[in-house]
Length: 295
Image (cartoon, rainbow, N blue to C red; front, side):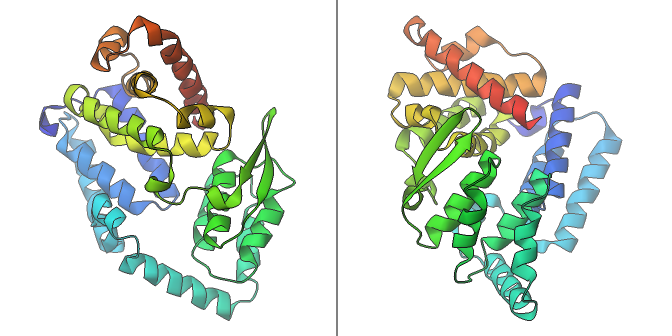
């Protein structure tokens, strides 16, 4: 289906506008440009809004030329010029200002999750002896947001730290092995990545308006539940369970974008039988809790 045939209804527009704002605030310019291209290609009767999107996309291309580089191309070249440039810039900053790294660590005490993630994104590119140990020491005694926990675990694993780390997630204490923290898609259990692939495959045919956010939302979700009992369950799903969770992800995203979704049709798309209905309903509950927590 051509994107030009997709109609963006008011609730979908609101959803995408909120996501676009989040991307810009957290300096995820390439993702913002990708979303803007998607929105411009869709059918929308508000010409003023279309002009705003095109102007914003043009500004991103001028201010941040690398933002117009496709996401897929960026993923295929993890050691891109842009990333290397960022590493060099941050190395220069940390060498010129001995307190720069500590300033970033202090930002982790902010009440703003976005500011914390921005600080960690910079810290992840700074190669300084003992930095990962400092981050783990900061993380160990507190109940940080799951995104913060996962990001620090990734930084620690990439730095070569090993051993168990116990963290609090609400009422649950989780223990993870630092060195086993996934850094790439290939490091995750196969079943987890198969779920989002199923959603992209099906939604691309039946509901392209949610295909764009399927991968982004799923990556956030598996970071959110990493190390928990839910993550362990997802890691060992077989085909029927993968279908049930994929259908639940499709439904929850469709409801977020449009306000309602054809539940029975979605179940049929994924071949979810009555035997897996309970697992589907439980998945809807878990994913619904996650999306509400991000609102």
